[in-house]
Image 1 (cartoon, one colour):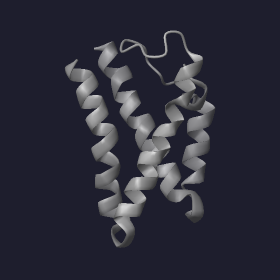
Image 2 (tube, rainbow, N blue to C red; image 1 turned 120 degrees about the vertical axis):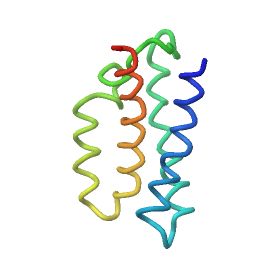
Image 3 (tube, rainbow, N blue to C red; image 1 turned 90 degrees about the horizontal axis):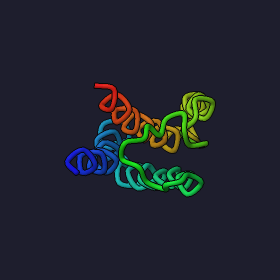
Image 4 (cartoon, rainbow, N blue to C red; image 1 turned 180 degrees about the horizontal axis):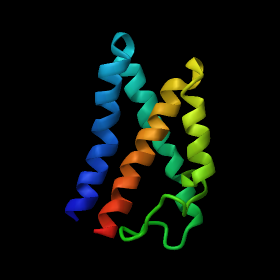
Length: 104
């Protein structure tokens, strides 16, 4: 329960921190766009069960796959995609910390 709460808080707050630090002149818009990248979790609808707190999503869900993550890294290089790509990478980072937690 606590891990899920921290996970959700990180999904909400970490994009805000990144938006504030790197997109200061338009941080609210950047934060909103990064929060919108949470839609990447729609790929969970393809899984059974849809939510499993003990499953590592990285490499399991299509939009959380390693090739997808490589595309998100490449997208950061393109200014029009930078905020969206940053949001997606933050999302993968937060999900990745859950995978690491499960290994410990």
